View 1 (tube, rainbow over the protein chains, first blue to last red):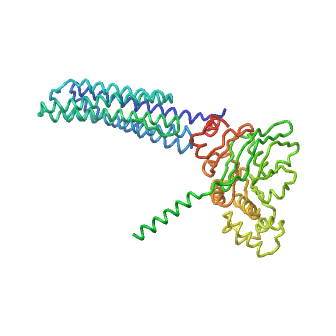
View 2 (cartoon, rainbow over the protein chains, first blue to last red; view 1 turned 180 degrees about the horizontal axis):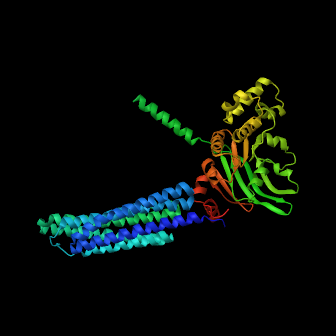
Length: 219
Length: 274
């Protein structure tokens, strides 16, 4: 058993960085929703400042992946592991950007009292971060059953998104003076819905990793 | 309007050409081949179809039987004492183990290039002309033509055309190997067997031989044994993975190096054993 210890070690390091950026995105989203709910502008600004950390991690993952390809010339599942790591990092980096977008909406709403409790938004956030966490576990374990479960959870986020937007539009009819805030809250819903879509992409990448071909889990 | 019709006709014609593309013929059909060196079984139940005008790579760890197999294809293996075989290898439909099949006849159709370049201690010209001379070609003009054509075919003509009468040993290793390929082409073979043809060459010479293989497959069927998996991935159309004398997997090279079906193939190509 000659093995490729160095390569295995480097692959694990790459995997670790992915978990790191995943945890970062989850934390950023969590803070963003907290800032929105408590209308904490300071916290929102902090999220915006911190985003460069996600960018750095993302670059680091890309550099590691390129070096691994160049130096180890991986094939088959090893090559897919690296390609998929790059794709997942791209999706997670995007999710971290959504946290920044939510923070910006929080800043735009400012101190104007929220027109309604943000229960639906919190629920969407809760499901999408749960999806993110599960998808990273699925990647780590190369578990397509879990990846499929994650993709299925996206329907719940989509339903909540539909309901919330409908509700916000109705409020808008009754209280048109709140249009700017309603617009920002609609944006927040959209960001969370998109974040869940990116997690669904991660599930698709896991299917590609394990099965070696593309699957569309979005339908 | 006329132009549109013309265009349509051209397109239809192209479509016809595409659909009329003939499936490739099988050059070598190996069926239930077993081979023993004395008591030791080196090949076990090999079934393998090799198609014409393709590059077929044979990969596998040392001792897996890949060199034994390729040497069986031109019956060179018979030179090893104590070799026994069972099963069949049909070359163009005829069993090469048939008593009536002359080994010279087979080797006129099947050329071979070895790991280490092995030119004769003669001039470059004589190295290439040797085979055709044995086959009775004496006319200087025809021999000249064959030598030039073969050296061009082996992508070495420009490097040696001004020193055809110099000793072949004066060439670099990479040039010697291409000279050996030219020598092989001179007898106008159907198949070229290559047993690790670049393992003794530097990277640039390796690249030249690899490019040459790509050109040669337009006219010849090539079977190449290689230890270099990236080489197999780069240059072959199909790949056979041998392990302990068996063919574990034989498929399109794209498939073998992206999504192999057998776990042992995956472990070997990803470097987890071997």
